[in-house]
Image (cartoon, rainbow, N blue to C red; front, side, top):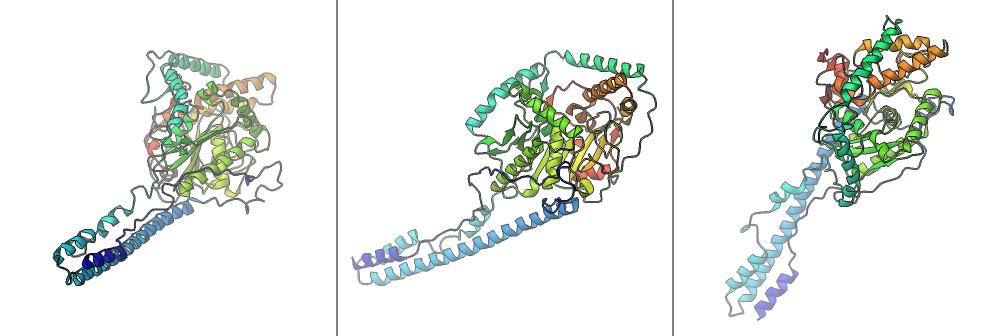
Length: 541
């Protein structure tokens, strides 16, 4: 009995073996939304005498060189963190194993010494001790197995959090409505139902054919006045980079028009089980956040009218139209831009809590959405791609020509030419200034489509301010070409992108050159091709 008592005492006092598991920071923590209430660091022409006076207060707008350097620094830092956690794990496991072995040997020695005064066989106690406290000589060391699981596979790219059951239920009515719209050929998707009969596309083609004949009757197809050359894109950065592709940006922008639509390959960026989104019927700003398969967050801003979203939120359209006219005809920065900036900061805060890198957040949008994406990129230095967006009333030094934000504009669409850094709509717009002026774009400008599509507009704009009838002719040609070349389906055609989703996919005229393969390009790859370092593959349709 004395030996048994001694053995029990030894077992109670001996330290138990322990395994230390490395847990990456914030894994499993509950995400939250951080509302930003501070005023955006914007430069308003009407409120500030100098557009560059607040540059000191504005966050850094990294150039492509700084952007790629930060990507490399982040990769090296993540690698160093993984090595440090692995070394700490090994050290902790070795210490725990040594303590476990020392406790095991102490218990064994105590049992052997005490058993000499007892009639019971000591081997029984030795077997009991070895069963509960294995030693290094009899059991393989577990440290190697521990190391193999200390680094989760999602350390570099956080796994998107799924929608909650309630979140899916809330989205169900919109998805059901979108399914009906697909059957009616109002929207489209590669994985959705197809309309049994496509009646509208032939009507669309007939109407635009009549419109072009009217332009010829008015002699708007004559040789236009000569235009100054647009400065070429200059880019000598790395030819590749980790960003979403042009197709992902375009489909995310198109999805902002579609009720219950999802961009191909992307999933919602969620907080507490719900997609992070915003819609303000007073300012007209609406946006949703998505995650790519590569673990990059894309903020997609909605364009004017909201597309099929009008079925559920018709009151936002007047505010969006007011925002459009405010930017074009005044020097003010509309409230929608400030709301877009606040939403981007909310996404940044939520993404940081979920483990996303700051360099893995991008912005995009079409038309008004592209305007808002430009403004956010200008204020926060976020990279991205905007489609068919006019120029802005806020300017910075260089206007983002060394940034990772790109404006894609289609020849023939007047929206992208409503600016002072691209010629074509003067005198309707303020005077043209290469790379600047009072309403420039932010970021690089990439033109797609057929340059000849601008001919009617270049002739029609000469009628502006020459009489009431001629003004009406210009406006009629302006809006006719707007609907002919403005919608995302036309950009998808020229960029060799399969639109998914598509909203009124039949509206417009898809003709002219196709830049094959451009849809699969990242931002650095697109800039490399446009700058002429890699010959683009262009097919004439």
